[in-house]
Each structure stands twice: as C-alpha cells, then as structure tokens.
Amino acid sequence: MDKQNSRFRWVVFASVLLTYLLMASQRTAPGLITDQIMRDFHVTASTIGLLTSIQFFVYTSLQIPMGMLADRYGPNFFLIVGAILTGLGTVIYSLGTHEYVLFVARIMTGTGDATIWVNMVLILSQWFNAKEFVRLIGLAGMTGSLGFLLATVPFSAWVVLLGWRGAFFSAGILLCLCGVLLYWVLLRKPKRIFPDESGSVKVELKREGTLVVLRRIFSDRQAWALFFCHFGVVGAYVGFISSWAVPYGINLYGMTRTDASQLIMIGLIGALIGAPLMGWISSKADTIKRPYVGVHITVLSCWSSFLFFQGHPPLFMLVGLFFIIGFGYGASALTFALVRQSFDIVDSGIVSGFANTGGFLSAVLLPSIFGYILDHFNGYTYGFITPVIFSMIGLIGVISIKEKRQASKTKRTRHG
Image (cartoon, rainbow, N blue to C red; front, side, top):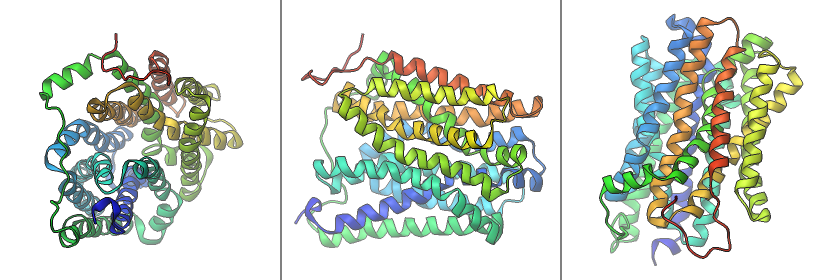
C-alpha cells in the first residue's frame, strides 16, 4: 500500500488543515486588541500599523525563498518548525512588557506563518492523487478564511473571558502542540507504515538556475499583471481587517469589541462564499478574466463608498460593504487559476508565490499608511484613500491580463 491509497492520508489532511486554521487566525487576531495595545503600551497609531505590517512583511519576503527550500529539502520539516515558531511567537506576544518584544514576537509569527501554504500544498500533493488534490486544495484555501473567521467573534469572546494575554498565550500553546502533532503525523508514523519509502517524495524536474528562473519571471508582463491584480484585491482587505477594522467600528459607530468583530466575520462569510461561487461562475462562463474584472470593479466601488460618505456610511450599508469586499477577497483564488492557465507546470509554483507576494505586500503597506494618515489627519475619511488606490492598481492589473482561451492546447511560457 502506498501513501495515496492509505487511510492515514486523511489523518495527514486533518492535521495539516487544523494547523493552517490556527496559524491563519493569528494573522488577524491582534487587530481585535489594537486599542488595548495602544493603551497598555502607550504607542501611537503609526506604531500599531508598523506592528501589524511587520508580520506580513516577513511573510511576504519569505514566500519565494520558502518555495525553493521546500522543493529542495522537502516540506515536512519546514511545516513542523513553522507551526512551533508561530506558537512561540504568539506566546512571547502574550508575555510582552515592551513594544520591542511585541515586534520580535510578530517577526517570529510571520516567519512561521510563511511556511504554511507552500509546504501544505506540497504535502497534500504527496499524499493524494491528482483528482483528489484538485478538490482538496480548494477546501484547504477555504480553511484560511475559516481561520480569519475564528479570529473574529470566537476569539473576541476568548479575549473577554481570559483577557488578551491569556487568550494569546493559550493560542500559542495550542500551535506548539500542533507542531508536535505534525511531527508524529508527518515523520514518525509514516516511517512505521511505509518503511520502504522515504519521508518525502522527490520529483525530478528540469534543473534551471535560480537567477535564470527569477529573471524570466520578473521580466514577464503576465506575471506582473497577476502580481498587481492580487495586490489590489487581497491586501486592502487583509491589511484593514488585521489592524483598523475593529477600532473603526468602536470609534465611529460606538460598537463593543464583540460587535465590531462581527463586521470582520461578515466579510469572512463573504470570502467563504466568494471563493467557490466565483470559481463556478468562471467555469460556466468559460472565462476567468471577465468575472474577475467585475469583482475588481465592485470592490473598488465599495472602498470608494467609504470616501463618498466621509468614512461613515449608514450601518446597514456598512454591513453590505464588508460582505462584498470579503466576497472579493474570496474570489482572489481566481488569480491562481489564471496562473495555472498561463504558465507551464515548471513555472507555476514560483509564479504563484510571486502573485501571492503582491497580495501580501499590499497587506504590509496598508496598516502603516492608514495609521500614518490617522496620526496626521482628523478621522478615518482620508485613511480610506489608501484601499481605493490599491483597488485601482488591482483593476489595472486584472485588465492587463491576457487570458488563455480554453480552445488552446498548449500553454505558453513566454509573454510578449
């Protein structure tokens, strides 16, 4: 019996997804306690923005290197270490007594978080056949949104119950335990079940120098179009909910922390619906670009609405705006459908990492820019200029994409 026919593969699947769920929740959970951090540590909005951005900066900068390392040395070790590192960073965050400790903690968390997606994809490709993999990778993607959802009302209630330090400490311990679980599931148990197989499956691919690959991708117009497309639809949403969404609800609408976190939950429900629905629509329409352009236009209109209402739209409208913006974030999975459509398999991994870098680069930039604007201007109105500009960049990117028609039998590796 091999790995792809064993029942144990479902244990692997559940263990990896549980780890991803918890790691994804810690990307945005600090946004729930922004005002408490500002009060307890006497820091400015700019500092909070930088604290939020640093994790996404580390995550973003490690995407392409992590893909190369996982391909060369195997994904198991990096995922185990990543889970434990994220857990330790979260524990240190909960025990921090100075803002510099918080920065170190978020750097550790960002480093650990950077290991999850690339290595998870490689692990699932080892344990599941091609047909199963296509179905399960979509479920894996939705798990990230569920992690964000976990970091709304459920984690907010946990903060109310234990205090923010107790809530983050317990989350960190749980992540460390996930690392131990992964060690048993990915390394120890498979050696007993499959004694004749190595711990990782190595696939021989065409060898090409790293600089040659990077030079080719970085000079490719289609790759840059996908980069900017993802930049616009992902980062504005992720950057905002991870830093300023809860304080925005509390300060402008007089919400409690739990009520404000429900706004984020509404956006995440939109994301959970957007991913499968837009995939289905694109499949039925036999085109990815046109529905995706529609998504970008809609998201841009939503962010512009905040400016139109001077940062304070009616509450009923606010709920709808969060849902639609979240829906657009869920639809961002179409970026990677376009990657698979446009590039050969030998390049799809690095291009996916490159596009994902664009999405999280904007998540790095937005909290700091938004916080800087809040420090220098009165109110949230001018802050919303940032996601509007980011969304414009995303729209330009998606319009610039050259879609490959289904009728074509060959995939191109160069773009003019």
